[in-house]
Image (cartoon, rainbow, N blue to C red; front, side, top):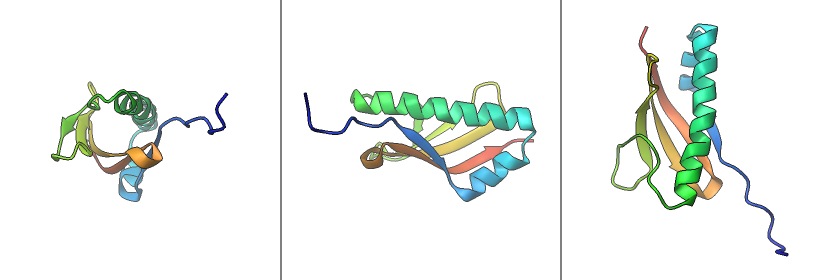
Amino acid sequence: MSDLPPRRGWTVFTEEIPAEVMLDMPPDLAKRTVNFLVSLALEVGGATDAGDDPPGDPMDDLGVRYSFQIEGEPVIFEYVVLREIREIRIPALVWFR
């Protein structure tokens, strides 16, 4: 048995402006967006832990920043993969009204 603590899962952190955009959304769209982001954190984490590319369109050559549109929803966002703290961060989110 290992003395190392178990690795924690991946989380999602939404910065202030994207969070404000989600608060302005209709409640059902905001809930779908939050649920999508939580699921995405798990998917990104699984891909990253396996050494695969995370989903979305790469926005840099470092494999850190990606863009993604939620299929069927008027929402596009950018996310940053923070491997060392096992988190994805949402610095930008656009809701097309």
